[in-house]
Length: 266
Image (cartoon, rainbow, N blue to C red; front, side, top):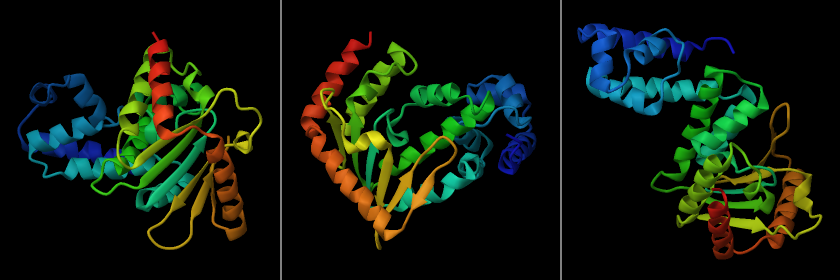
């Protein structure tokens, strides 16, 4: 992945603010409680800035939120071009219905779980992985806003058993599901392990309900994602959703099984 303009802008503004404050990289690192080598790496565009780093720099250097705003744009720039439109739809949706038969959906992934998936895919390396992880975590803020969308997620039970990242990562991920699943507008449902063939096995998808207008769907594949707006196709996916949802357990029973599964990852 080539160097991104927003990464260079962040590095340049960080350097400008640091010099204006009369601080060396070592002195800034001490005030931030980060290493001087990290400050240097960010200023040289060798490391993407993390959210906490940008926020602390704004505070220490009196940036007025400038670095945080640049980082937000940087995160969006990190997204694959074909995914950016969907993220806008996702962030504006009043409701989201997601089915995932293989892994935890991006909106519910922990940092370690997401990093493991990106590393395992082999599409990105080094700091490119970190940029993608940061972008994925940034999307999750939609669930923490004052009026979050209603999120209904159906998972195949095998998602709880696939050792993504090993026991520690899985235990943390499942406990995170329990935490998010306890929020008023989040509903989780598991398709039992004993379920045989059902429509969801044909692939993952998401249905987004905008504040106004018709539902929009998203399909993912090995090359890129596809936004589906054609009425007949969206209608078909709604029918598949109803079939998948009918196979799944209630929210309460799902949380109980997730809790039990989390304790098996030791």
